Length: 117
Image (cartoon, rainbow, N blue to C red; front, side, top):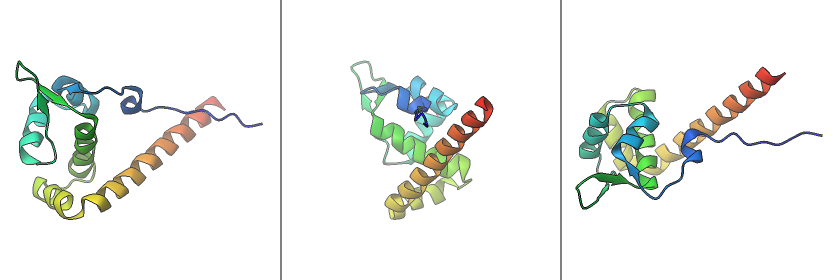
């Protein structure tokens, strides 16, 4: 009999209503200044600000950062290229990114199983 188990990624383990800029930066292992920069460069990022003026990012914002990170850092696109892809082919880019994310998750699970054998 096979045992089915789930390995949650760090993003799936933590589901909150809002994330601080520091938490978002930690998720992607980048500086907060890069998060601020991407917020200015990409119109799909729209954080809420609390009474102190601190940025509070929603899960949707984090998902959008993940897409931007994938396009810029992992695929090596320029900012203009990533902006164009998001504005013209966002649905297609999200689908491709989701496939890549799932494949990475499967690979991680397989490597985990291999290490246990």
